[in-house]
Amino acid sequence: MAQPSVKALGEVGLETGDKIEMEVLELQLRIAKRLDKPAIIHTPRKNKAVITAKVLKLLDRVGIDPSLTVVDHVTSEIADDVRRSGRWMGLTIQPAKLTVEEAVKIAMKYDGSMVMANTDTSTEPSWPQGVYDLEQSLNDIGAKEVARMVVYQNARSFYRL
Image (cartoon, rainbow, N blue to C red; front, top):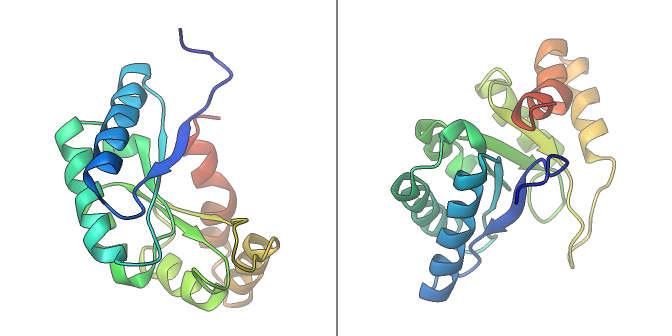
């Protein structure tokens, strides 16, 4: 039974892209689709482009609404592929994943449309104030509307708040 307080499924995704991971991810995505819940999709640091391509194909095969998925840990390497898929982009501000400067470039390239900023705590060094720093950097270059979208409004839309 679906719980109304549950806003999304995830973070789920692939790290290596092996058969077991693909099977588990497909089942998780089918649950999100059946429950009509957004899904947050992990992409790895290694082999990002290859594994993201697998993720995008699987998302299409499962038939989950693109507007209900955010592909997380997007870098410039995969941003265009994610945009072409019609899915949301998650920009994870963390030293080992994406710098504020790189996030500014991606956010500006897409005018903030379907882009959300986040931070991440992992085994790698983290930057908890990364979203704040991104907002300030965007404001400093006069992109206040892009900043508002990327750090606030887009997440509210995606999570149906």
